[in-house]
Length: 195
Image 1 (cartoon, one colour):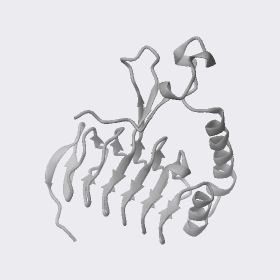
Image 2 (cartoon, rainbow, N blue to C red):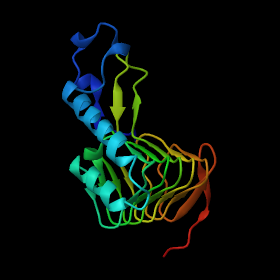
Image 3 (cartoon, one colour):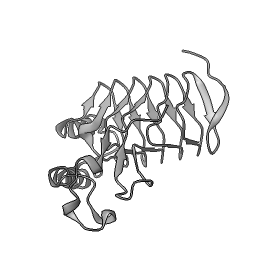
Image 4 (spheres, rainbow, N blue to C red):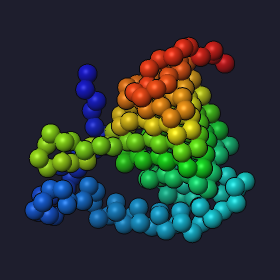
């Protein structure tokens, strides 16, 4: 079954914004302005905050609409594209260099971890449509899921509870609960012991 995009730019952005579809914005002016304000806040207050100030960074994310459970550890070098599309349970961690590109809603379960330079990509483009619209997908990461350092999760890919995506791996399909994946594209390596 094909993945269903939560957001299709072709349904929201008028063709009148630019004759060349490759030059059309993917989001409304309001959304772009909101991201501009967030990026200024991120540059001035989030990135410059000392590493132990996780509560402060969680407060900033909440101020821009994120749902943050208690004890979340988002490090100053982490990047969240759209806080208003971020839902975190308790104890979620995003290490320095971890990037959450979330034009659509992303949910992270309790104790989910994004290690250094992990990349979670929530969107792509419809290359078969001459308008080349951005397609954004809602994604879920189960409790105790772990995206290891420099690993990438593709658009619309979900990770089950306790799933692990190994160092530098690329997930192009959903990862089963309590299973370890590695490689490019990632394949099942072995089962993970349940907690």
